[in-house]
Length: 283
Ligand code: PRT
Ligand code: ZN
Image (tube, rainbow, N blue to C red; front, top):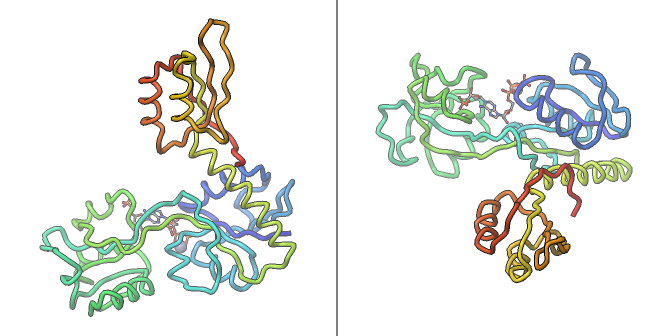
């Protein structure tokens, strides 16, 4: 049995549950309980505060956990970052009051910076040879400059609206973060095997999300050009249409190249282009 810790409630809860579900893992209890066992996979799920997850994984109370990379780095436990999960994206940034004439990190010299991320901030300041005072607080960091508690803050930012409403502006991004899967370093062979199984499923789900299935009709004279733009998993599937001289082409396109590929396909006289989402993709 593999034990996974996920956030009990908060920004990572929904996406963590969704990921397990997309991996075909059925959980019938909600997060009202401390833990639950999956019905169709040897997985026990613990619902915890995100700050506690690195410690629990380190102590082998849980074997693996889903947590923000920001928390993982701040807690600095000796556990492995196994996989980035692509949700819960944010950045840890230093912000200063809007009217502060900020030019470079040199301007942070001698400032008092409020943060809940003292560990990461300390490393950043040391690396950049900045001598600033760290004022550690546990919440509502963004109000610190306004009430005269600090000159600047170091906090998580996603849309930037919290900074904006508190008359602050982003000065330095010190970490780009997303939810990650972290694991204990001493997993048994059996647990490692289960983790591999889970990772295979996570990869299939994530690869599928980054790709689209595409079907189109094209004149045979353009097939060579179209095959070159649509490499697909091995090569595209080409089948003749009832209309003489035309074929149907099916392939997979990466989300990042999508619009560029479509433009090229149009240039090569592709017609009736259909684009479909992919549920799972095993490469
Ligand atoms: O109860 P528990 O301790 O488990 O939860 P928590 O309140 O400590 O954490 P939670 O649920 O707020 O965040 C969990 C994780 O989500 C974080 O550790 C990050 O990895 C990730 N994440 C992604 C964020 C944000 N985006 C985010 N915007 N965590 C916090 N914020 C906060 C930020 O602190 C600031 O107050 O949102 C505000 C800024 O947001 P914008 O959109 O106004 O810029
Ligand atoms: Zn927390």
